[in-house]
Image 1 (cartoon, rainbow over the protein chains, first blue to last red):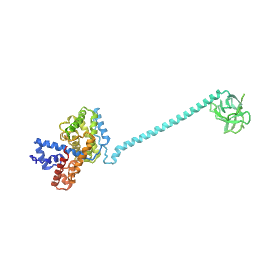
Image 2 (cartoon, rainbow over the protein chains, first blue to last red):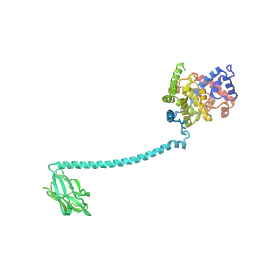
Image 3 (tube, helix red, strand yellow):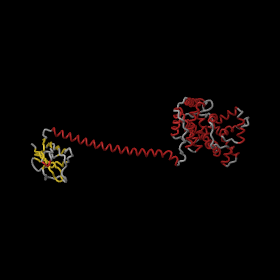
Image 4 (tube, each protein chain N blue to C red):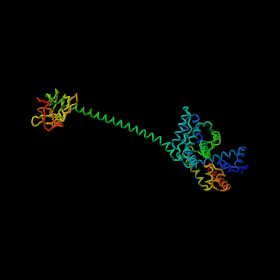
Length: 263
Length: 185
């Protein structure tokens, strides 16, 4: 006892919450009227509060602070501050937790995946189309450059091919450079070759047999255009287009529909 | 504890409280960073349910935000208030009781007689308190922990452990006497 009907330890026991029954009633009754004991009780509370520090460390998840700050922001914006969001039942590790956290996330992820997949496919299609267009442009550019180079060369010959009646009035023109081994052919044929037949272009050299320069594939309304690479150093005597079996022949066998000698 | 360290701690914590009163959200964030670990540890130890602990943790700091103007530096320290609030709320949750806010502000006003402003200081003090508890005889430590973390009275501890009430009272008296000496500032 300390001169009061209370033991010194009672202050700490009261602060600890251990007193009950008659002990508790007697303690509270006395402290209510005793200033010095109230001071001792305050000191005991300070001591007992330190026991909080014996709890094993358990840092909160970052989400708590985020929710708290959202709560403050909602209040600042005049919205009804939400009751602290009950944290998902993490301790339970049950379906609720998974459902609450991962189901929306999984759904969002799945949706994002689908959207990304669709978007990716569209992008791939666009890229493929643009790549093809770019390739075509490059091809055309290369042809134009080659044609310019061919046309501007001093040793390039220009030959107009005269049509036979089977050519239905079409005309054709050849630019050829033996040194470069390059030939550019163009015509105005608007009809395709007869069934099971092909139009075949020939270079007739100064000596030797005609050499195939390729199969023509006229576009309706446009005609044929093609840049042909030939063995270099083969001077031409003439150019001709014949009708051959589909796919062409090693040597000309069919009627000539376009012929033009190099002059 | 030296008076200087107490003054430093109080001025810093109370400076944050003053900014919170002025509706500075960053001040509450700083106070949260400083003490949320300690508060959450108490809540988890009592509730053994991290979801419930985090719910109360958020609510405690939100109460600080709403009632900061009513804090009285002359009556208690911020970490002291937080520690007691955490313990009381967690035990109330266990026992399905709801303490009133005004009542809490008065009852929870305690002054932790050490500087807990920094994480290092908190770790040091945790070591000191844990050490003091571990030095107690096992039965005494168990009785203290049942009272503090489970909110049990003498009679409830006796019923829980199966020990005679008188034995429980004696153990607790010895324990608090020892702790009083060990935890002197």
